[in-house]
Length: 182
Image 1 (cartoon, rainbow, N blue to C red):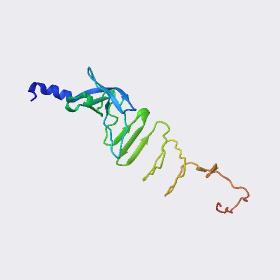
Image 2: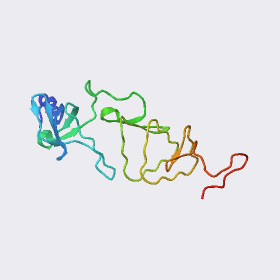
Image 3: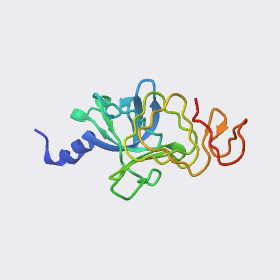
Image 4: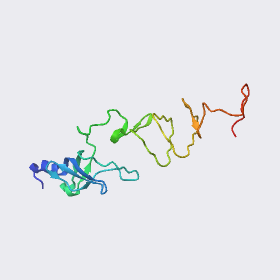
């Protein structure tokens, strides 16, 4: 039986605060410094079922090392502890993912917002239900189906022909109209 004086030490062996010292992306493991103690390469916790995630830890990130039976060799890295180096990215009740260089994916009661610092490439099929607003430039490669109105404040160009300023040859000026496109 454990002596009462040993209980704080035993708990300290089970749960240890530390900092990520290095990350091995290929092995999905990281080494944690807990004061003077360095862990062996250990897995970090991720979503690992039908819906999986991949968000590797960052060197210097504060973590909690969980050591079953106080055995650091079989430890697990629990992430998500904010620190001075990695402060909370928001202070509201929305759900957000923040990436390097300003990427933000934010889910609110009103919908989904993606803020990207530069080019964002999406490969595969994307279905958007609801209103879509693009601030900045966008590019679509491939076919697009729009069920609903398309409105533009400026010109629309298709096949190099301007919707606003194209002209038709062979038409006499006056009150006549041209035939529909064929």
